[in-house]
Image (cartoon, rainbow, N blue to C red):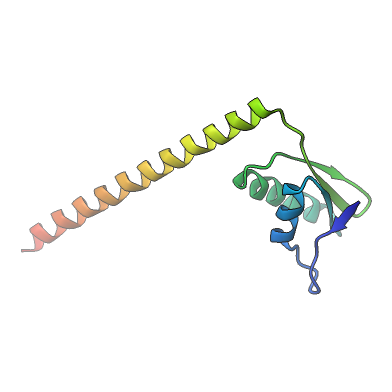
Length: 113
């Protein structure tokens, strides 16, 4: 069964879409023009990757069909481990930027005194 994940206003219900993908179900998102196809396909892939879900996006007549990509257990573990490393790297980079900004502010304060 394929579900359409759109609310009353015609906007994509991203939470419902991700929930369907986690359950292993397919979903369809209506697209009116080429711009919608491209924009929504990029959004879908990004949002699913953030949640650790590999997806297959197929174009249909006026819709994008999204299906979870079946993965082996080894691939899934690798993806999760890579995601953890990436998050750790990002946290470390943010911490370094914060420390550099603090040092810069401290130097500015000393100069003004």
